[in-house]
Length: 91
Image 1 (cartoon, one colour):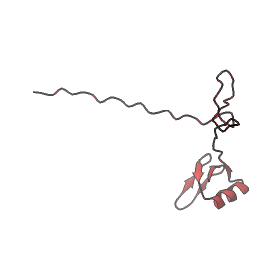
Image 2 (cartoon, helix red, strand yellow):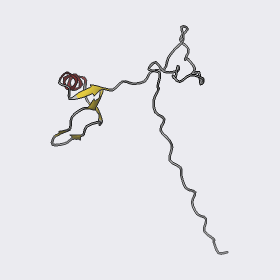
Image 3 (cartoon, helix red, strand yellow):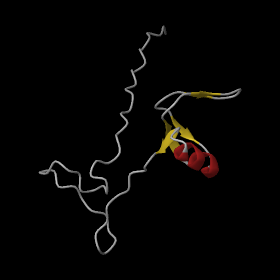
Image 4 (cartoon, one colour):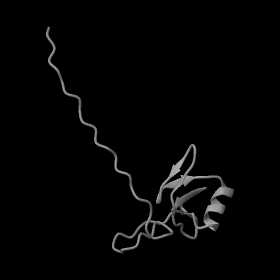
């Protein structure tokens, strides 16, 4: 279970700061949520039509209809690789 920490915690083999998303077992996650130490992290889900196919987004609207929460996940941008420099070789 993934939870987002609301308070900082530190132990012998871990350090969690405010805002960190941490993977914990279900019992620990439930205990953290009940004690207001953490909040559950929702996983974005794709919206589906009545027949089970995935819905498409309508770009003319502000809300993203392709996701159930109306926002969708943030895209991770790929880092640009710099090309290797060529070196002259003697013949």
